[in-house]
Image (cartoon, rainbow, N blue to C red):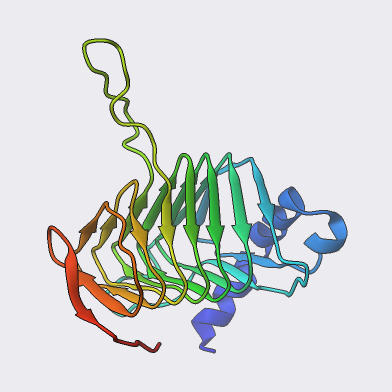
Length: 220
C-alpha cells in the first residue's frame, strides 16, 4: 500500500462511517462492510442495500483503485440510489464510476469495475459472479425519456439487463436495455449490445455484435 492509498483510506473514514450507519443496523455498520472513497459524491442515499450472510470489513469498495491513464486524484464517483442494490460478495466499484439506481441492481461476488464507468438502473440489472468491467462502459436498462406513438402507447419500455458468470466486458462498451450476456463470455472493446446471446465460452464483438470466437476461456 502506497502512502497515498493509506492517506485516502484514512480520509475516507468519515464518509464511510456515514454511509454504513445510513444503510445498516449498528452491529453491521460498525464492521464497515462498505468503504467509500472521500472522492465519492453521495448524491442520494435512499433505497436499501443487501449484503450476504457473512459480512466482512471493506467487502465492498466504492471509488478506490488506480488506472494509470486516469487522474484518480481528480476523479469522482457518484452514488445516486433510491432503489435496491444487492451485494453478494466482494465488490469493487472503481474510481470515477457512477451508480444511478431507481430499480434493483445486483452484483455477484468477485465483481470489479476498473474505473470511469456508469450503471443506470431504472428496472433491473443483474451481474453474475466473477465479472470484470473495464473503463468507459455504460450499462443501462432504460431510455430515460418515454417515446409514444400516435395512439399514446409507449414504444420504449424499460427492459432488464442480465450479465452471466465470469464475464469480461471490454472498455468503451455499451450495454443497452434487453442485453443478455451468457456465462464465460468476453465482450470486445467498443461493442454496443442490446440483444440476447445464448451459449457460453465466446467472444462477442462488432457493431452489430456477432460471435467472433467460440470455445474460449479467459483469466483475470
